[in-house]
Length: 411
Image (cartoon, rainbow, N blue to C red; front, side):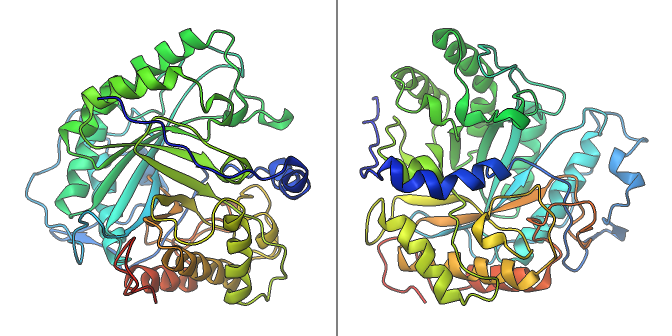
């Protein structure tokens, strides 16, 4: 049975948001990937240290690409497995695959990240990975060399499920070919033939929907930040066909600007928001000031509880000036860990006070070692793994008394 289209009601006058969101767009407010680093006590599996050096990031040369690691590996378990109605406390894991990496390497990285997530007291993980197109008017979707195969995705999901983690599968359009220097962004694509684009996209998605279904993933995100295609009636058929292949929740993740601008009409059962709301405060702003800034944005859409909304992406750079452009991963200003940690604390408070479904922090890169501290000379300031203040804020959030949407236990 076809789902009713999901309307998000509210209109923010264009003149109000234009001046506020224009600058973050220029800076690049739609994070995709970057080199990252991380830190928690390292995992040792059967006497083998899983920490990766730069040299080892090319994979295990002694293992054939199809070889599987031994099945009997101890893995850390979540504190409490997610059940319907509980908040989703999660992280976006961004995975650009390398076909030269053996399956053994992929499994090793998945276990490493699983252990890290459990150490944060997460109960959920979203696996984001790239797919590709040509220019803004292209009609063809492709699986590039960096797109994990459905088979490798299946194995990673299996490992996360062994740890008791709720899983989301989230393909996201890579922007490398969209001429981002001149404003190219996935939210601006205008396929010259929309029928052809949707047919190509559905063909690409089908094997990943089947893989997600085979491993009983909880959610499949059918699209992310595709502003220019939102509301197209062709989504009705695509989503209906997806629901024939995948028994879980089919969702769509809207970008924050479109979320507050007006109705988002998509035929899905759940809406996520990639939430990079700029707040015009100084670097020494209190958590309460940040919470107030977020609520000003959210109130443009709707006041009160938002139990049907999940923050699919939330994060900010650990640097001065980040509050005014939280999604900017290009700029490298002076490192300021307190800015990031306070933002995470504030966002978690908003999630609880507005009774949202949960939050996923952006992000950890799949080829990272979560034991390493971030290299601030090379990496994005948005990286949170390996920043003790931010990890402390995440753990505090994930171990709070908040029981989920519809409860009054927010702390």
